[in-house]
Amino acid sequence: MNRLKKIVTVDDSVTNRTILKNMLKPLYEVYPVESAVMMLKLLERVKADLILLDVEMPDINGFDAIRLLKNNPVTSDIPVMFVTALNSEKNEMQGLMLGAIDYIYKPFSAPLLLRRIETHLSLADHKRELIELNRIVQQQLIGKIGEVFDLQTSILYIVADMVESRDDATGGHIHRIQKYLECLINGLMDEEKYSEEISTWDISFVLPSSQLHDVGKIAISDVILNKPGKLTDEEFAIMKTHAQIGMDAIGRMEQNTNDSGFLKHAKKFAGTHHEKWDGSGYPRGLSGTDIPLEGRIMALVDVYDALVSPRPYKEAFSPEKATEIIKASCGTHFDPALVETFDTISDQFMVIAALSADAIKAQNKAILRAS
Image 1 (cartoon, rainbow, N blue to C red):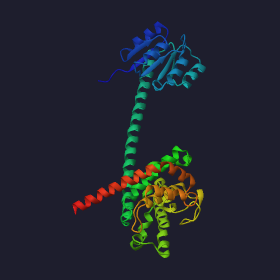
Image 2 (image 1 turned 30 degrees about the vertical axis):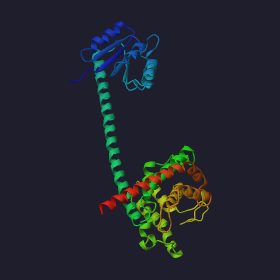
Image 3 (image 1 turned 90 degrees about the vertical axis):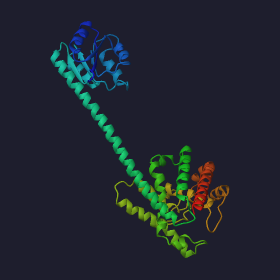
């Protein structure tokens, strides 16, 4: 059974209130009040579907009353019809401009007023239905976008993991890099460094896109990638090509998609994370702020992870030693502003590295038990 619509009638004349109540009560739940003040109190406990509002009333007139209604988020969506003896075109225009859905002159025709009320209530129902439908569609769309994003992230993680798995020395690198990035980005925002640029980033894109920073290594021979000793000049020249290869590969991906926000960050991470602040890096020898911020941030966190991780040709440095090395490279390898922020949050980096090391040890023990 459908509930009766609730209509509030506001008129300082008892005769007018009685006429409206008798006319409406067979079809609606009617709440007659004699002033705008009483209407506002009533609306604190009654959710009205429509308000019939007189204009000429003491204390608060109808025009001021509708202003109060429209300025209150709780009542702003309630349809308001003026029913008034004030029948000038100027007043009618004012009422409609204030947000009324109709302006009816007294004396009114009861059948005509009832039909207008029915029409406006029906329109209000349709409006609510459209709003609800739009909400449902948006939720479904957001859900689908989330599914696509999760799938995209999973595929990219698999690709990045395949690249990492070719390098026996870099276990857990991708996971740690994302954690380091998040810490450093949050630190920069807290200190309001590069915050104007970072605030334009969608972090849900930036962090996963960092997984592809070494994707170019997929083109590097295993002989070079897993060489236990120091690379020759020729081998190092080949190794350095991974930055340009990765950037080019992601660039080709960009050409085949209309939504390149995710890949835009990935390409900068891949192509510029070996550039150095003083211009001595590769592949393009960029310097200073000509290096994209993504590349400058990745340069720091990538080196930190390399320093605190064991390699076939070196033992892992302590977090304190790694921090000392990075600070010593301030202004040459690394952006001074980033180093300054890193120094204040280096203990967070140390925790991330320790947790990752513990996880890798536990995984190795599990593998040994299973073998």
